[in-house]
Amino acid sequence: MLPHDTIQALARELRQARGTRTPLRHFSARHPGMTIEDGYAIQRAWVALELAAGRTIKGRKIGLTSRAMQLSSQITEPDYAPLMDDMFFAAGGDIPIERFIAPRVEVELAFILNRDLKGPGITVCDVLRATDYVVPAIEIIDARIEQFDRESGRPRKVFDTISDFAANAGIVMGGRPVRPDAVDLRWVGAMLHKNGVIEETGLAAGVLGHPATGVAWLADKIAPYDECLKAGDVVLAGSFTRPTPAAAGDSFHVDYGPLGSVAFRFV
Image (tube, rainbow, N blue to C red; front, side, top):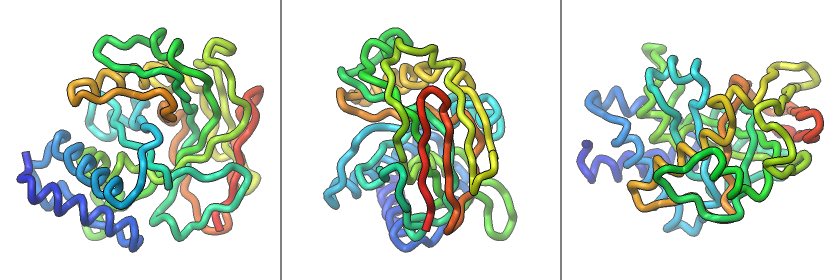
């Protein structure tokens, strides 16, 4: 485990990088013995800094839910991070590109809970019973730690990604909310249009076979820290498309079929 002072210092670096839009070199290269637990410790220290500055937590995100992404990251389970209140953007509007360093967008479903979910032993059925509604969502991911090292070109390791809020930077919700038992969530599909061109398509079953599976996993994962998913939380269940790069002027429209659509533009 990294020393406490090192963890605190790295958390401060991340917060400054987000504010100045200046990406950092890989923590895992600077600290070769870094572990997944170190990554989460840095993430928690960064959250504490945000809370001290007046931010609030509105939910959680789950990442690396597809088998392909897990293999590429050399892990066997997803990762997670908080959704802070300043990460939420309205659908149908303009989003300032200067809020991000290297934004990319992913297609997801968001679960809005109406009761607490505290592990261990949470099942998919428990998640569905605790969900008020499910709504289409787009996650904006970013890289406060470089995705690829500026000199070697090596990809960052999962420890870096976890430290970096699991790459989370923004969320846009819209479309038509549905009760979790109103549709077979596995078969919810979406087409992601960038500037009028379909860039990605996918089915929600790509998220661990069922998007509620990740929510159950997360409730169990945070239980040892005496944490739980709370009533009112927004839980992003994981992307079922590959990340799509974005730049100023890009317009995104994601069509979820019967569940409506979500759209916005980077300016």
